[in-house]
Image (tube, rainbow, N blue to C red; front, side, top):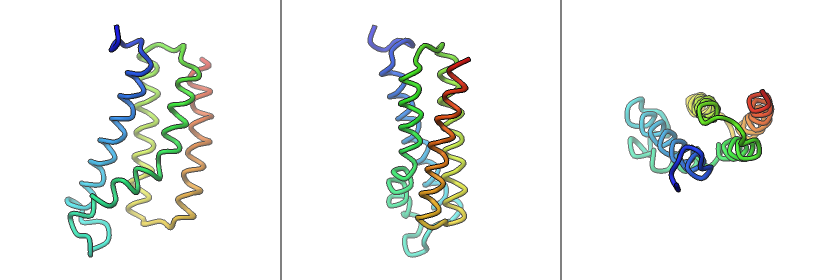
Length: 128
């Protein structure tokens, strides 16, 4: 069956779609509800911020996907929990960084730390 819980493609596609949708919702909330971002873009700034911030946080997302694929011999429930935890951490980091309006070099260091933390977390999570 193509779309079963044992299919890797389904898990990785679901994780990617959850990341895209949740990061988009986060940027919409930031600009339209909370009024964050550059005032010259106004409430429509999410159209610019969503792809930019989403792209900056893709490296840890791909690290999580890669290591989930490498150590796939996990139960679907355990895999779901791994993806949920990493997604929440990435979105929290994205929100904090957006709210504090950090500079690009600081963002690059943060993403690097997230990548290393993802590798360590995945290794511990899937080796149990």
